[in-house]
Image (cartoon, rainbow, N blue to C red; front, side):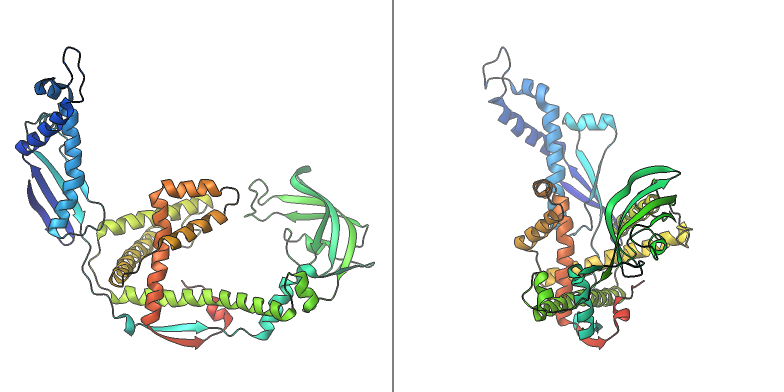
Length: 445
């Protein structure tokens, strides 16, 4: 077998691999001889069929199998011998001339094919200990805990019947029937529906028109469904609701005490506050981690210089662009609606694609150097988490991951990235900085 490098420019490589027809003939004869004892043909005893006859019947199929085996096995061996690490699966190309292909299958011509690929770039990983990171920290205050505890305990609040007019924060019980263009619509009718005025849980403008009514009062409420309303057939439509109030209640006093905690399944008010504090700290911690991770990735991106593998960047861009255009179509929007142009958007997402590829290579290199791996237990936990999100479909979800390696890889990749980021957090120069909740939760561009 002969290997010729026909392209070596930057990261791009092209190899022409030639397997002499005499080597192909040796492999073919070995394969045909192995068939002698298996082939059954009328007029011949088993195992006595002439090799020339077997070749006539099965030669082309056997040679086609040999060709496929050479491509799948020898390609990897050649790359390993050269020490090349392809950025993606190499593209294999063979002759598209039917006459040449027939001659190869007949054993009358050398088999030649090409491997086209890009190698992974060489680069220096930045000194992780010199990454300077500010970790935004928000102190969880007692009043924040108390506010969240009251919200959590809202369902335990008592309500007392009120004889007067309904006002903000009162709870009303009502019957209603909704109509669009004078016709009742599906889902627009309910009996004994409860609504706290001012909660904002109904269509905008609905609650405001019920303030001042008493039990037994009737009113036709006129509203318009939001343009982005979930039910497409109602979005943006004007509607009327015939409403009858059957009960008005004022809120009872809500206190955080042991009795309230027990109604929530906890043994004491102190335990309730402890749980709430832990939830707030976890929530704040998620924002903090996201900010720290963003700083780490920004600095790794800025400090890493490498020649970009263009095919990887192009594929990443196509993935991103497909998602962007699908989202626009789904929401019936254009780039103009997003205050940009297609040209500007393409440029931005091409830069994003390059950033993702660069960071993916850097994180993968760090993970490889530190021998970071995803355990089978961690992977199974991620699969179980997916199953938990689809109650009643657990068996189908499990079978899907068992049969779809790409789906498992899709779970493994973010787990691996987070473990590498954890390692970097452990060695980078990180200093805490007190910030406000608004600063912590402010979205990054």
